[in-house]
Image (tube, rainbow, N blue to C red; front, side, top):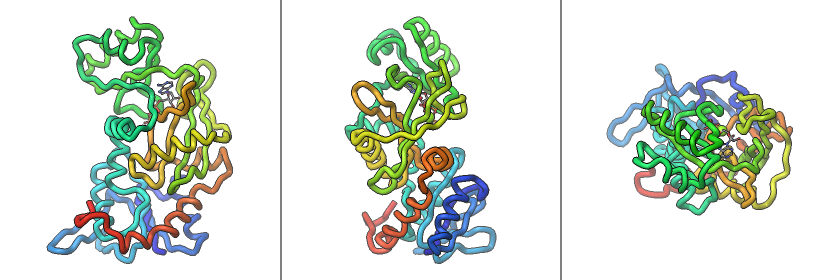
Length: 303
Ligand SMILES: Nc1ncnc2c1ncn2[C@@H]1O[C@H](COP(=O)(O)OP(=O)(O)OP(=O)(O)O)[C@@H](O)[C@H]1O
Ligand SMILES: [Mg+2]
């Protein structure tokens, strides 16, 4: 197979691992910075160029597109899809997963368990909003936050009210979410490939911290998932249409609750913690499925 990885940096751990895993299996791999590529369109023709070089003979693309390039990157990915080139992460699924609200709406609609969440701009009655989500303590999240930044635990109703008001004052988009205390500062990252969980690990926040992000001092631990947790992770990835996904979940008293589904999951944390060859599992999945996209076209336009 000829595999093209859409990544800004070939030295990133995940990109390097995918290149190695593909080469070990005898495939030819190229890494392309999608920011520098361009699409050329004319009647019946959809080409992709990098410099003066037309990209041809690609069997599969693996998008590893950074959050800042979601819109442009997904349209380039769509160009490949329209040429019936296989991707485990479609442009539509990528866009869905990158919009936190849209992803939560889809998860809720598809019957995936999530923490009770409110989305609001500037409600007239903050107290009712707090009550509807279950009261304090609760978590307030800035929609554009990552790595745990912009995620605040409000322990009392008064604190919750002031945090929400402060964010409104900044005209920020926020989520207000029930606090899952019994998760004890940990969450679980499960990597779904196809319809299987191929690896999972637990991220435990440092002492006294409710956020488990590695960037805020958390660390990874191996974990064996319960059947219900595997099922929830697979259901979440499928709801968004992702064939490769990093699903974050909280272990609650009422079972697994999905926090987020990532369409370009980092491989370093999970591979180093579990010793599992996740990159190899992704390449294997592509080997088993890439031919189907050449014959199957879900609808007439395919976008
Ligand atoms: N409702 C909640 N109840 C308990 N803990 C939570 C809740 N929401 C988030 N957390 C903890 O805070 C951490 C950070 O939250 P979240 O993953 O939503 O934001 P982020 O990491 O900043 O965003 P992203 O994952 O998009 O980078 C989670 O990993 C989890 O440990
Ligand atoms: Mg997170």
